[in-house]
Length: 381
Image (cartoon, rainbow, N blue to C red; front, side):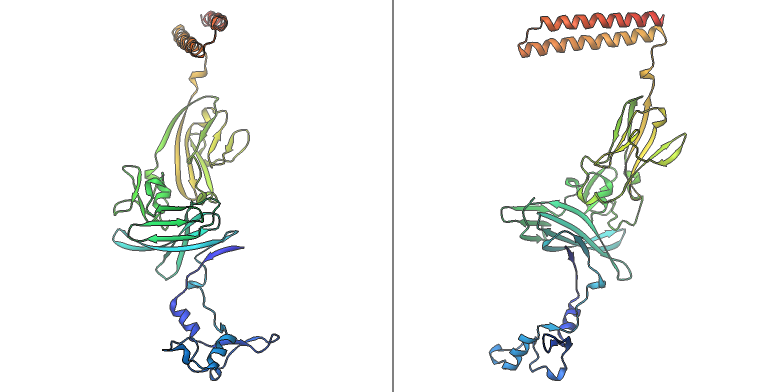
């Protein structure tokens, strides 16, 4: 079971209704075209001034011949969009014209409501050879669990009105910065464009980046900020492009690449003891060492989603080698301990808990720390 969105030409529909009728002589007979000589006048389907003047032969012919002989084919002989295990309930359409470097591109945007309260946003466009392509742009969770009963679109204000049996919602067609937080998703929406200077998705105007047809692979590479991170040797690190992966992108392949001085650029292969893929297509790196430093690029298909520049600080885990290094570490620990002791006392006062026993524990812990650093001092010298 599933649903499809199809388009038809009015001329094809008219030709089908002006063509031959189809009939079945008996329940055991095949359906065959009706000879033109057997079609009564006025021809069924044509307009008349007064339907009461129609003869019985015409009315009986209409009752017994509900089918036309020729089928009306889809435009370009295929549906615009098809989805299994889904039922579309309502459909509205919008037209968008965009000026891309002087060339006018026209897109048809379909908003299809479903029986589970979602709206599928589908874009269609034509190539130079009158062939069309279509792509699923977005999925909106509008009335969760409630079938969408009504969709109306206002082309002037660019607003969509959606209603179920229990609620009514208003949705802007031009969401841009409210919907897209990265360049790649922004440039694929014909209503929007990416401002590479402000790093913001805005309503489209000439000069902003846009690639609704996905014909320019590297359009967002220069707009992707490489996030710099300093990590400690031995820790684990999580890299990600999304807090939550948009539903429309869950079926697209996401790949991580690492570029290091020793190995060059290579694709990361997930394995449980080193690289783990998260549910949001992120990457977890376990037990980081010097070899894990370098650039990490996340690609969706051929397009760059996000990038990280990782520096591994291995010096923080090495023991002090000189007296001044030891004194610095000792001083840092003492200051940290004093802050901890003060915070502990303040917490006990707020909680109205007797602090005598806990303070004695702190003193014991302090003696252990002093003994520990004294031992380090002895070893260093």
